[in-house]
Length: 307
Image (cartoon, rainbow, N blue to C red; front, side, top):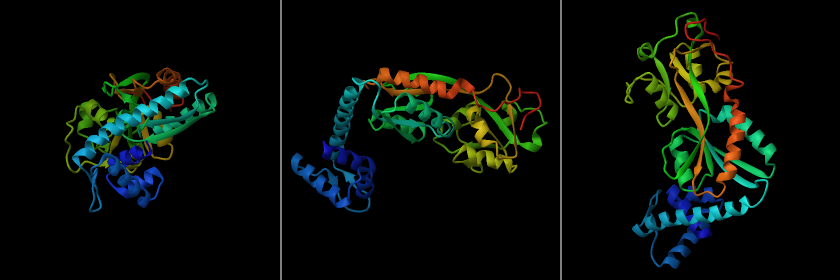
């Protein structure tokens, strides 16, 4: 089992150094374990040479099977944990970047208070990587925008959240633009890979392929600060308003109805024996989100925008 875990890490990272670091062992030790595994199966699994490694055809097949075996073993461990009350052990939970800074601290506080023996191990990543981590057994659950439309995952809706318009403070008294008007303005967006970017484009009815001179940011913080500098306007989720706008010279306003929104939910593998426990944790996540509590008030479209 130890050799299979090392091999799975090597297949995932494609590099002995990074795989060894992920497994918390030395690179020579990892190399020795791989040689022993190759001796057991009786054939090479890795094509060595150069900075990156390639798996042989047997190695690729073994990597798929090893992933299934390791996931099944982890679920046996989960099954043992399920027999204990309250929930104990580790919980590897992923969170998308447009939720993590605003919701995760409250989630950790609530869950740790309810399950003191539970060790939360959060990971922040875009939706695609979180789904991959769940399917491959590297994560137990994830908080994302629904739907993810992955047949092997259960989806549990938590709450609805609106998007709000952020624009320079000097534009606070101007009418709130329509989606059509936003298309003609310099709309600042997150980089590709963020589901929030796709949702903003959908609301503005803009094509996924945008001009090369479009300004993108790696985080909502970057976008809001650029708005404060007068570079353009942006959309952010309502839960981000208190944190992202407190140090920026910006005005915040709700858009005209129907307003853009998203459904935040929690997902996990259907085969995970902790599914029943995850529903309880999801309810605590919903409470931490407060269904909008703690979010700075935003004016109605057409009214005087707040700052």
